[in-house]
Length: 128
Image (cartoon, rainbow, N blue to C red; front, side, top):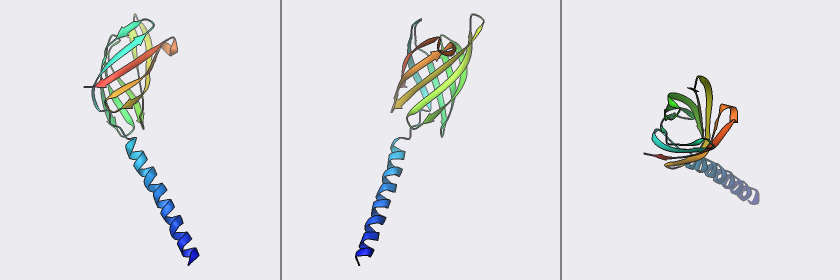
């Protein structure tokens, strides 16, 4: 009888842990698809690019339109972590741009690095 009770308690404990893990995973799922207004601050100044995201699971694609021109990008969303990058041209030189941040509902914030980290700054975004 005691062994049976112990097994039941063990089974209930395992089920509670599985349920907590599943519920926690759902709480961290975000969908950033749509139009966003960004504010970017770097050592060279500030900008307000418009960014459109399309999310398919963890895969991210979209368009950037701002001081660095109009271009497409690719990236990923894992939990609340967002990362996307693109290559553009400025004054005849190719520049890699990488955004890394976190999303919380309809807001996003993080860091931006350009030209291999030679220029960096911060960004925040709001979903329209």
